[in-house]
Length: 446
Image (cartoon, rainbow, N blue to C red):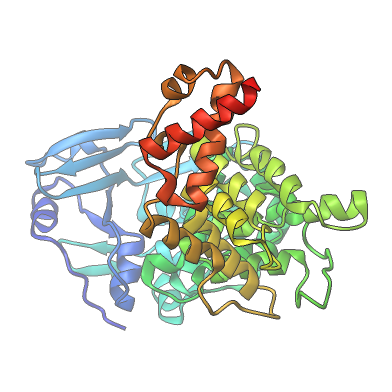
């Protein structure tokens, strides 16, 4: 394990001139020792930021917690004074009382895991390791020095445990794991926004340090720690829901987690939720035929303002991907109809194909290796310069109105023309479309 910690020049100068020792703490030490990609450098010291007496700009971030950004205009570091925290009942993540001017030992006790509780004295080039964090880093294990104290006070640490373990590939200490399960209900006190942020990081955990399959391990840990009930209860409801063994090797939840495993980052949230309607349909109808439509409606609640408060754009996109993911599952839809479907859902097709391919692979039964039909038709429409939107037609509504169509007839005629031009893009000229309109208005008047 590499014992050298690289300290940028500005930070070393800062430590030499400050009125108290400056320590690096947290993930930067862990990553440096394990030769992982470097994280941001967090620093701390016993004094409050404005007491440091350093030649640098200090920008307050959180006055209550004493955090501030220290910068020379080029480099920038977050500074936190050593502190103790007290929490009220539950696991709301926000401390009810903060005390500054404490020792490193006291500061380390508030930190979540020992691997993040190692301090590096920049001026003296030495480690301070109150709770055996260096050995835990060497052994690649996440351990809490006082699991109940750590995990019961702040429910978000339960998701952080899963996320950091996934991102780093660390194992989890047995006692820490057991206590985490006992404290699982503390997650109910955490805001939707905080849970959403951690979930987003877990879904792309493999991109953090390049650890293959880290995102799958992360969502699996959320299951093993029994946390889905407090993040997305509808995901927890998929656990144990059996699927037709002719088409599926796994139950509904494991299939969905496997879909996350095989999906690219852009559709992992949709992969997680693509079958969320199955438990409801199975219970109500005794089958899952309508699960795509039912699931799409559920996604609006799960991800919307009554759920994890994702943006309207994300919520709508995931809902549409869930709604569409079963279309043409048999591969028997006729080409002209498929062209219309692809054109109508053009913006979703690349992501939809990614989701469908991950879904198929996650069955454990079959995998699509040839280009998907949607991809083939998508490219065909682009190459043929087909009108993807009605506004891409060579005419507009005024031409239809001038021909004699009125009211709803105008939009209906435009839509009919658009469909014809999607199927045969060569028809999309002003001359040909006016000719079609002229013939149709004559038929209406007969």
